[in-house]
Image (cartoon, rainbow, N blue to C red; front, side, top):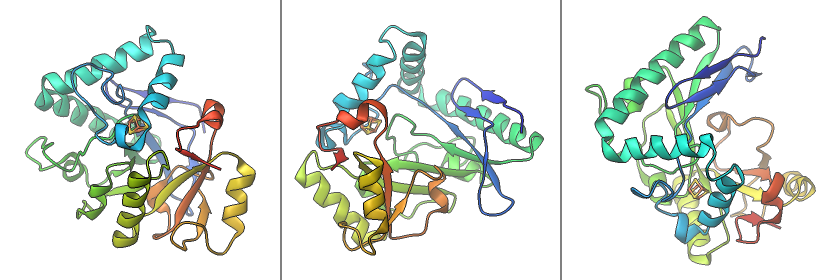
Length: 251
Ligand code: SF4
């Protein structure tokens, strides 16, 4: 498959599709906003302080170069979101429609992650093009995200939106709340282990340390919507995250 890129004002995708589940080839387009309150116009990550992930996330952005064009364009995009949500949703709608056409042309299925570096509750108060949500506007698209807003797990989400809770031990109250939400709703939890070996050790146990759930290898694919239910998604820390001491990385 040739190496092609889909680029738009809001979402980005690369055609390095992995074949998953038989003949289904998904390509994921991701939207990257400026995390937490970096845009200086509002906070796109309501749980960032409680979950203790804000500093790590911003320093990652910092490494990309605080004045770099990538960071600046993410900040500008996030400012557009806060300045005029309806116009932003219309822009996103146009871009996803273009991505759907691009996927059809390349014979792949469209998947979209709106919260690449944010944690916005898209299922609430984000109508677009006469639909209650972007998910209803594109039933043929599989949407998915990681989230730290554990109350979202209790909502009845659209059939084409899959959420995985994101674990962190930075704050015991947060860790407890995520585990409770996972237990009460059957949602999956993503856990980042410091090393691949630690992750593999948990994967090979029949029950993990997390509410007696099986831990599966989450690094084989990023297509979280294909995971079985009631499992822990074991990821291992890459790059600078290996040195994380906030509690986000386990082990
Ligand atoms: S919620 Fe996610 S995107 Fe937001 S600051 Fe934390 S790690 Fe970053």
